[in-house]
Image 1: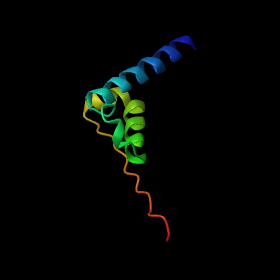
Image 2: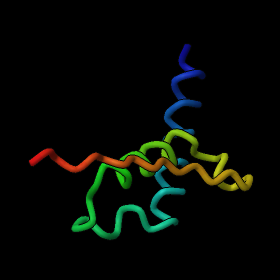
Image 3: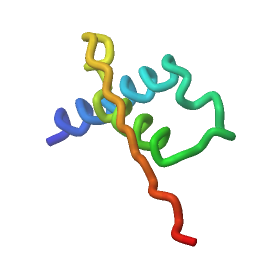
Length: 66
């Protein structure tokens, strides 16, 4: 059980490093659903980023009705 927790924490730390390397934390003024999704997926995908996987989420929010 402990080894699994250590692996998960290490995986998420590496994922956060990957998101930081891609500059996802640098521009707080450009916050959106799409950017949040990309950061979350990149963090969860973690080390896969260094193997060539490029996870991105496109979240189109419809315009409000008038």
